Length: 249
Image 1 (cartoon, helix red, strand yellow):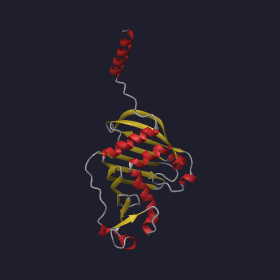
Image 2: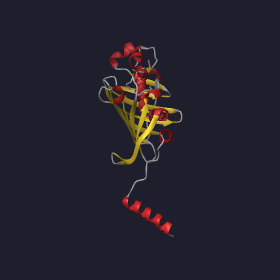
Image 3: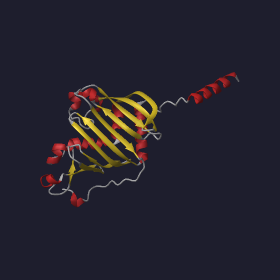
Image 4: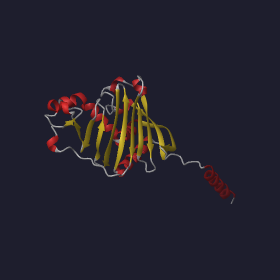
């Protein structure tokens, strides 16, 4: 009876003080696996991205569809200094070429297929950066980095923009990422730079990402270097489709 009374007292004290339950995850791999599964089951979301890496300053917004076969997305960004629309569908990345460059780049067509290793002039100039940016908008990409090279530094339950969220601070080991690097870093950065950098991850009650912040400042050592992506309106219908074939050069 005495033991039962002590247990009851502890329950009542916890209820009265309103102490929140601890965050759900203490292991980076378990965190990444759960958030990846929640992203897939979430189906779709809208997102906004803010990039400040080295000399790169850009903003973007779009919508994405998530599934077991991968992520498809449509977004607008000023990543190369002027507004541009990108579409990533079925693993193929399309970019809408500025009108003044279409004859030179896209055979007069408004869209081109962009690849990090493409041999066309447009891909050779910005293909790698745009491919990195598209990957960075996909939460599965960062969650994969956390699974491969992450360790949880701290965690807490709190709020983000007035909504309940679990907040995780994760440290990523750059050397363990290999060539799988965040947008804005060159492909050979892993060989030139060393060390670790922090990632902050906010999850909603269903473990879906609501904000991801990569802080590359510790490894670039040249001022602010951050990539912030926010996700909202999970499960809303989205319109994600490739450009019409006749408009692709």
